[in-house]
Length: 497
Image 1 (spheres, one colour):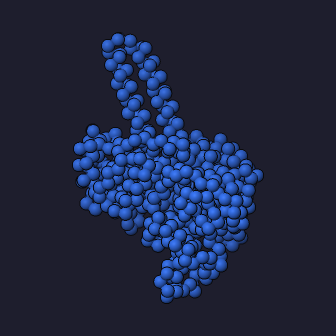
Image 2 (cartoon, helix red, strand yellow):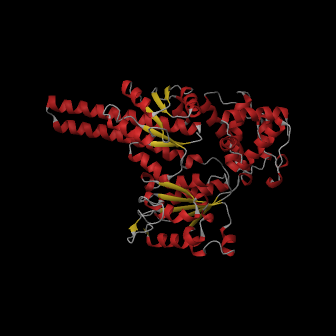
Image 3 (cartoon, one colour):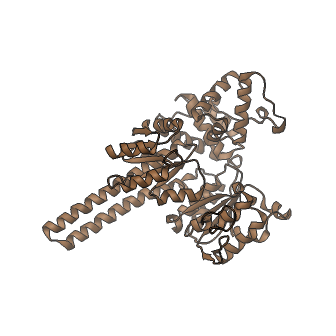
């Protein structure tokens, strides 16, 4: 992935968003990587500019005044000159049906706010290459059709066309495969025995079609990465991977979210809606934090898993679904079963195969490899030479207990690269969160009257609540990620641990 991003395709990108901060952040990210960017605040202006000078790719916000992203995309696709331009939606929504609607009106992908630079660059690069190859394939087909007409060698031309299509299909397949690689086994860095066993388990699970898998481990250990690797390495990779956070579904809407409903099924059901099972048909449904699923819904889920049919709320007819279930939890389900909060029969159905992901502190030999991996990744993303990790910094990393696991290490390395300014990474560049610096009881947390000290306390509290995730902490504080890094650097200088 990094190698591909070193030499991106030169392209014109049109960004449409009514929020100036989003436009500025995306412009900086894409322009720093060599793309020519045009930014506009609304759909009408985007349509005019695209009609005058068609861009190579469009990034389009969904929620905008006057004309939303769906209508803007539909009008773009209605113009023959613009219909082939790939559209990537920008959304803060996690509603699966809205994303499906985006694909139906002509979108090819989506990114969610807050933005991750690596995510934006990978998706833009992938769809630019797919678009380039598609146009090249169309050009070759036109040339072959002309050759058929002039030389009257229909059979030979068909063979050449088939060869060209096969080559193009192989190239397109390789590009699509990068999404698989992004979530595949290459994402697992380490030489410990536990990682070797997980890799072996994932390899075997990729060869199965229906076995349910329960993935357990602490937050930040990579449970969703494992689930995606299983899906994208299997024959289901061409079908949807639908992640569902069970702890985020309102209790009274849980059944509708999973199984759907018909129009008029209950108050507020003004239209029919497909549930996550139907949207994931043919693919994989990832039930994250499955331990938080409402108890009364667990029996219905078990029946669906056994019968492979769903019945939307208000519908008398069942619908067959072909869905593989991968579940994850950071909670001890056996304890919940003993407390009567989780059904044992559902547990055994979900845990046909179990993958246990160890915390980072239990595989310390992998820390240097992961640190180097993240350092190389972020250096490439920022367009700078990869600095060295000093022995003192490596020793500090090895001594830290990483409550946020691999996710926390990733954010620590990203911050260290920015703080170091390209010089060797030293311990002073590593932003750890010692327990002694954080309030033990959130209910008794008090903000000092000193303005600078108050800012320090708020930053620490946000980082703790975000489990070390810089992007999430910035969102909680209402600032951009670069602003938070700047404040962290000043905080470390003025108020050292």
